[in-house]
Length: 294
Image (cartoon, rainbow, N blue to C red):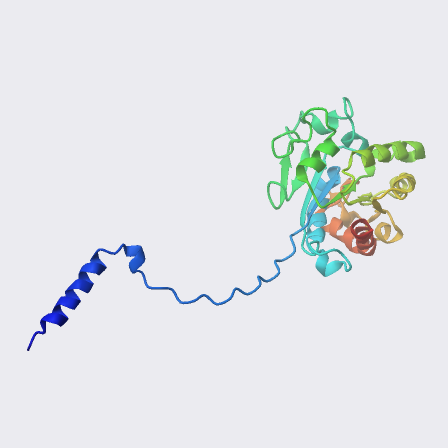
């Protein structure tokens, strides 16, 4: 084969130059990038809902409440985007009423902030530190509702920073709210401690087993309703003709012993809490829409 010196010299020079060129500059030249298309709209941010209440939440209602609030898109129409599948969290503290959450000093504040002497914990929590029920003590780092001079309600609203807060109370204030002035005072204290731009709903809790007790609770409920309704928060009664028919005087809705006798006449089971929500679904949806769209 005949070698041509000129061609050989040209190839050698090319190899020499290539070996002296930085690797980054020897990389293939990328093809022209097509024009960037507009980014698709991101999904609406998931809204968060916080429910604060009493021991009904710890004894069964918390699971039913959070399940309902996590599926509002399938149940309630007319809600703002983000609430269709909201993040729902429920916290219920032993024998508490609304005025315990707004207290600044003992003994009322102790119902929220003191360690339970018997069990070491005083609250049931859903969706905060675990998806299901956790028994916790208010005041720990996950629930810093008792630090400084802030009331537990204000501290909870600030720390949890929800898009909607629901206050679910009644039973432990039944005697107190037989007096309409006391119901008005308790509500005004709570309203003053809620962030002014935070949507809010007040609901009364699941009926008890005994009709006479429910009659007392209905009086208390009517006084609370009269206090709440002029405010910016919506109100949903828990004791209605439909819920009383579904819950009251029915042993299957409450804890019983081996003989069928009701052993806990004021706390619902998870199943009966779901029954309550089904019976009150229309009113709950109406209250949520009012809280979130007014």
